[in-house]
Length: 222
Image (cartoon, rainbow, N blue to C red):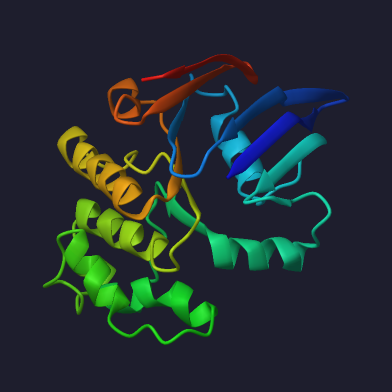
């Protein structure tokens, strides 16, 4: 489902190149739940952006569901993300002028699909069946993240990327969100890549890789 081969990413720091992701190689099968961990500045979020096609590596190859990202145009990568990828962010990224149900419908509308009852069904699945008509400002942080999770699954993605999805939540609420991710991973067989600094939450994934100074230093089951 996901292949990352000798991926390197560098950025300019003054007059020298700073290597943020250093020769990373690993692969994920369909349905795996992977946590990427490491200290601040280890390259976790940079790697996630590369894997999702939001940025291009300095060198190396990345493919999603058999499609290599490098040769694709920006429009091609955007099309791949619309059709095969879901996202969950730390800051929720809900559209404030849309209700919870309307937010979940957005990915389907971008694909030109009739939302039908899917948004309502997904909101019920994450425990918000009675909150679909509420706007983000009327929801708690945990509720907003559950709406974001429902939205991420709306287009039936082959793979879901989550960048510190519990970073703005208290520990108990964060655990609920990750438990939901695990349940949806098992229910829909969606591959999940989770970036987190929280080792307890990372332990809920089936596999964990650890980064340090841009290097992959450990790859093991949890």
